[in-house]
Image (cartoon, rainbow, N blue to C red; front, side, top):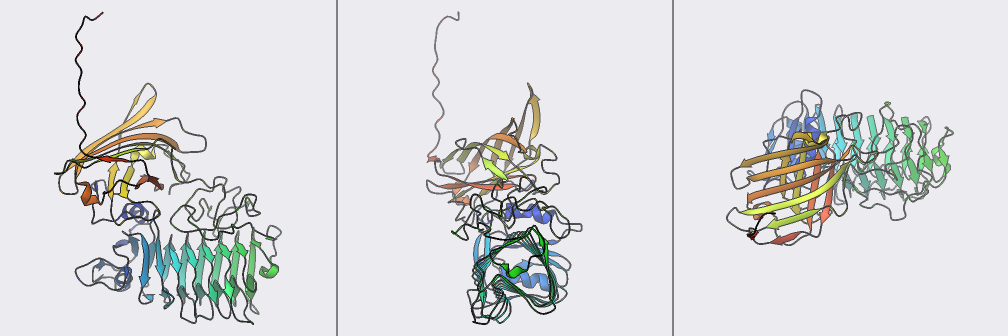
Length: 528
């Protein structure tokens, strides 16, 4: 869980940190070293200064400190204290043979761009790399793999988007899998291009495992090219519950001797993918004509239209290691998994992890000056899971065990670099069969303040983990130190102890001066 001592986080700390730190701490023992990227600059920074992604990867490679990024020998996990797009000035080369994870924030999102001038990631032999909740775009100007070149790599990609990669390349617009094992789950490939083969992915000599992925409008441009979505030379490509649509000149192609295996529940708009399972169909999967869009979650996805053939198509919602696929790319729960789910990366009837009860939100910001500013907020929210525990809702009390609330100026679609966060763990009581919790603390300093909170458990809606209403007062603050200026809108963040998170735009906030105490009226008379 997040550190309870981290009460209020000020302007020097970015929003996404609090949403990604728990996933980092949930790794297997011993935990990896955590490296926090604190700037969107895509180049090496001077010292002292922020930690850039370029320096973070270098620190993981060396197992030590590079400029402002502190790596260690052994496993490293790169997290982000920023949201937005990082424009690289050079390819990120991974050489460490220790485990390396790069995890985007669960709210806000991180995109890594090659600016159509360079490849994004070059993964060396014997590396073990995991990429989660990231967007890779405009990687190119290289023969093999516009976004990623994987040579002898154990590469795992989850909940990520690859778009507009491959300009100037010949093989593998987004990914060139030279050798090793590449496992891709709940990810979307859209609008990637190459000239010869593999508009999205070219598998040269790797074991490639695709599960619940979506391919749309990927292109091979040469007259003799093939495999708009996927080309397999050898040895093994296995695909399950994936969607192939709009590939030019075709969706799939395989070289002589390639072991191209249909594992079931796939859909393709043409017969090029050589389906062998009765559960795989050649038909229109039902992707939205709007293409990539912000449909919730940290990455853009392609929605399914109502009545799409992909809806409920998979009756065995597991990956190729037998693990249940419980969420879609957006980290929204697939409510009927594992008995039934949608093929592809997007679940039509998916449930957001955290729902704000419509009309329940109230937010007031008071600018009184001299560390006397104040925030009052109240809202009701529903926790739908699934969280990182199995089964979901296993404690039934996660919001009381830990709750994090953040407020930032701006909207969830365009997150600022800073905001105010408060961590709460409630002492609970039961009165007349109703459970409520309270929390109070005070911390000095420019980013300190006083927190007073009361939360009440409401009847649990069907199919959810619970519903609560929170009243929160934060006082003795300097709101300007947290970037809380202007009259709105404001972004409200909610995260529970199971790593379920949500972001909501608040456009009805009351912003003003000091709250005057109420005027008391004394009525004289005779008590009857």
